[in-house]
Figure 1 (cartoon, rainbow, N blue to C red):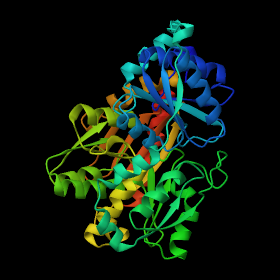
Figure 2 (cartoon, rainbow, N blue to C red):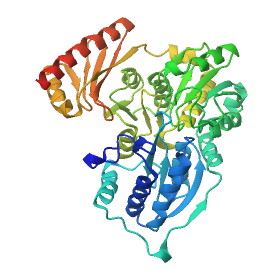
Figure 3 (cartoon, rainbow, N blue to C red):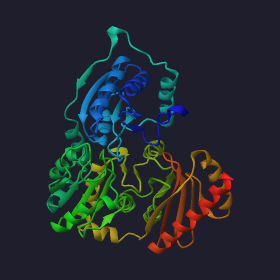
Length: 459
């Protein structure tokens, strides 16, 4: 959220620190802009478990009602459950109050179109124009919108997921699954989903607490030590951890090894392509070469996109692609809904395990192996574009992609991506290689090169 540059939306909705950047007053005004955009439509509103979410949901609803929009209030639920509800109930759109993986002092607003997918950048611009030009269309006193309570969306969501997997085959395996719900909304849906698939479920961090006392809501490997230890201690078959709004999932195999999202996405991709050869697979340029290796081996085609889940969803929508995935644990399963969905991803992984009669460690061990390292270099926002021009200039003649920043592929299958952050004054680096040492060396080498380029541009 950059109000001074007339921007509300970032790479994934509107985000800000509660009562400093994202105040109730501002949220009402944003609600009025969203309501004016939907022109007296009917919208579903729901929220995550953050302490500020009920307050901000009320503020958004006030703004929507003021512009004549009717609201079905679904309360606290996972983001993908709310997105499915928008599609399932055939309403005009939805608003989700969540800051996903951000720390507890943050919150945010996601706007959803009638198909359950977040609105496009072009639609975001229309809402921003209404907001900044202060041209919201307020309803007459007799046409103010109404609010009703919507119940049952989590059960509907669970039922929809189960239609895409072989429930009886999974149930026969009686898998023991450990769920780390991050003290948030995954606890409302995932244990019930898994028990409906015949699994034994052990939960950790499943009490709802918007301060996220157990671990940060970002399911990074360093935050999942407790999950890994629990899986090993009770001899569970698999562990799964969620982010703050349950649209991303990171898996732990039965040995307690934590696997980054590229691997589990590549596993889903492999079995999807075995049944659907020739399909397009959509993934951000930050994803591992593993995704392309699997597509090449099983007759698929990878379409690389800019980093950002909304971009993946809209590319899938445009191409009618049925599968997308990100390195951070986001899996988009089009036959259900082309959005990140941690619950759907969990069901797909269990379906593959049951189909193959193999453990998760065995299945992931069959995939090509890469080591991934990440880095960052500070860069003032105003220099980012000139720095990018310099990087492109200096990497001419190499095997590169400029979809988002610059990614270089080398002959030994290692690669490095340098891209300007959409939210912070820095460049992010993603390196991968067949050895950890080579990946670390690439981060070191290109961090130095990037610093030299930034210094030269700074003058």
